[in-house]
Structure formats: structure tokens, C-alpha cells
Amino acid sequence: MKAALLYAPGDLRIAEVPRPEPGPGDVLVQVEIALTDGTDLKTYRRGHPLLLTEPPARFGHEFCGLLDGRRVVAANSAPCGECDGCLRGEQCRDLAFLSGAYAEWLVVPERIAAVNLHDVPRGVAPEVAAMVEPLACCLRGVERAGIAAGDTVAILGAGPIGLMLAACVADAGGWPVIVGGREERRALAEEFGAEVGDGGSADVVIEAAGTEHAWSDAVELVRPGGTVVMFGGLPRDTRPPVDAYRLHYEELTVRGSFHHTPQTVRAALVFLASGAYPWERLVTHRIPLDALPQLFAAPPVDLLKAAILF
Ligand SMILES: [Zn+2]
Image (tube, rainbow, N blue to C red; front, side, top):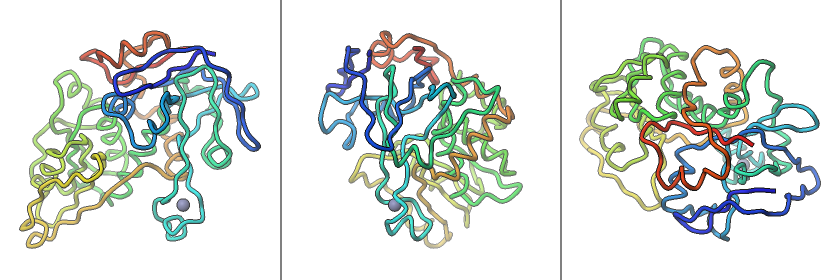
């Protein structure tokens, strides 16, 4: 079968490889479509401590596929259910991941198949269903933000994640404001329930740009007594400067949000199926697998998400 293999940062190749063999409890899914996302682009550019340990690595994690004649989606991880985090009802400290959705066939490991593999509701397009994982992360972020009805919520970042966060915030009763981002992306904000603004004095700020600068900005923007959620991950050992005066004297609350939970994965699938927002607008490009290396090497300026069609 054909698969994308990441040999090193900047070196992605399409190769003929053996079809993967599922182990006991694993399931083998025939991929219909896979979606690109910002994490994959980051991994392509600067590597990844978990993904690129033994290159060449299978790549890609957002997909929709077929299993025994049913259309299914899966999240890219599942919690262990036994660690300290799981027992406390917090994020799992030992998530098991899948990778390799940029391929004709993909093994979904047993742990993920058991809790985070779902049938796609009737009428949901494969490229929309495949957004379940990033949308589940956004629902987790909004859960962590503790939004109250009427809260103004500034979102730093106007990519697909920023737009999905806006929809989740609006659904939770908040007023999302998209801050920054390129013009053509900001134009979509309204369709996802948000306005565009500077986000000053917001009740809640969600950092979704994934830059050190944005982390600092998030702490600057929020109102005294407000909440900041750090949603975008930074490389290990990054220490962004934060305003200690604001944190202490203005009693800010700063929380991290990482990844998703089985509950937000289920909720995301329902949210996608609701058709409440024009999710399909987030897919701006449709390409064959062979064109993927070129797309990562030179992402089009108007790219939000690309669907790889098999
Ligand atoms: Zn765990």
C-alpha cells in the first residue's frame, strides 16, 4: 500500500510499504480520507520527540475510514484508565497514540479501538467526521476554561483550531473574539460565531497560536480576576515571560489544556453531526496522497486543512 513516511524534518516521502498487521484487539481501518493539521505541520518542520524517534515514521492522525463496511472515526489516543491522572479524573499521564493516517490502511490499537473508535453518524461527510479529534481538543479547552454565560472569550489564533474553539465557546454561551491571524482566516470568524477584535479585558483568554509570544500576550489581555487557558503547546523547556504582578495582585487564573478525553471525543462527534457550524469550510484543499510532500513543503497561503483523498 501507499503511505507517507517522515524520514527527518522537511523530508516526507510517499512510499510503497506492507499493509500493517493488526495485533490482538487492534482493528485495521481502510482510510477514506485524512486531514492535515497544524500539529502535523509543526512535526514536519521541527520534528517531534514521540513521532520521530525511529525514522522513517508513519505520519498523520486525523482520518475517516471503513471497518467491516461501516464508516468510522477514531481519536488518535486513549487514556490508560489506571494512572494517577486517570484515577483523579484528570488528563491521562500515559496516553497511547496512533500515527499513520496518511496511508491507505491504518491500525487502530486495541486501547483506542475500545474507547475512542466510533461509527460516523449518517449524513456526516467523511471530511467533516475526520475533524472529531481536533474538535474534541477544543471542547476540552472550553471545559478547562470554565466559561460562564455571557463571558467575553478572546481566542489567540485564527487557524482551524481557533475557529473550532470559537464555535465551542459560542455553544457554551460565551462571546468569542478572534484575535490576530491572517485576513483571509479572520473572514471566516463570523461563520463560526465569533467577532474579530483586540480581545482586551476579556473575561477569558484562550491561547491557541502555540507561540511563546502568544502565551505572554494571553496574560496581558485578560481582565483582572480573569482566566487564561494555555491551549497551544510549546517545545519542552520553553519558559515564556509572564507578568507576575498581574498573576498575583490581579488574581489571574492560568490553566493548561492538553488533548481530549473520551467524553469530549463523543461530544465532538455529536457537535459535528449537528451541522450547527459550517465545518466543511475548514477544508480548503483536496489532494491525492502523492501531493502531500509538496503541500507540507510549501503550504498555500489560504490553507486551513487539506483533505487527502484515497
Ligand atoms: Zn492514564
